[in-house]
View (cartoon, rainbow, N blue to C red):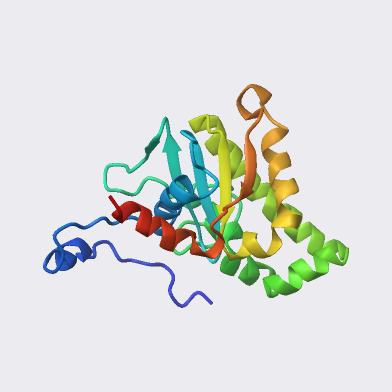
Length: 214
């Protein structure tokens, strides 16, 4: 309910603390770990150009290009949930941005913005309620356009989505999100498929294992 906004943490010495106990340490955010899991044991095996995205209380990404999982200068590649989607939106994200992807459609933020539990919104949409359908279609449009942006930038092949919002409502969201990608620039988007993470709610745990095993 906004009590944790904005988040002003800038540094946490996690690796140094773990280094006192363990010889080998791999640290990654949950979505990068999820991508490793899907590439090792899930639906992105043999995929050199793949995206894993979680749509849950927050939105985050793991990005693989030419067989390489992107890390970035500080290991923060994949924070595309903070790409700015609208300069007109007052939707507040935990990072302090207004109008970024996470602020607009992440599960908690979207529910707060519309003033209704998301479960109620999606139930209404499935029942054909026009107001609920407008909310769901708008969220899918924003999310899908973010995925289109990444497709245009990275020339990816497959996009796998996990997280509680997607897992519970994929049958409703998938065709809407797929349309936002497939309806634009077919030279780049042709054949790009949006699907569900095969490992479901274990994707991060399996991904952490995949990063640690030989």
